Length: 99
Figure 1 (tube, one colour):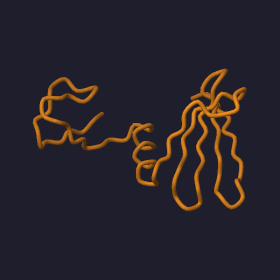
Figure 2: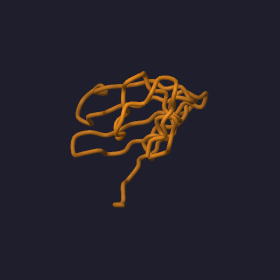
Figure 3: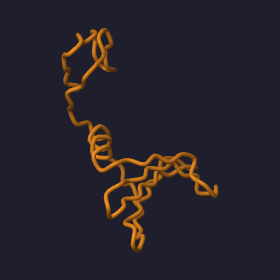
């Protein structure tokens, strides 16, 4: 894995902001409030506003983080639909572990 520089900045009275470059023109910025919520933003450093922002609860942020790290989950899938990476539809009321 190549060395990736992660910027961190304390936001007094709010929490922390972390920034990770994703390419030459964009960063992923994560603001973690001391009270729990997280804000995930795609930022163009030359623009005044974020390109996109999503507010996540602590629980939602944990699920997204785990998915990004490749954690395994049991997925509830609608009848007849196959999650990405599976070879067959999953019956209704069943769960499937992803790789």
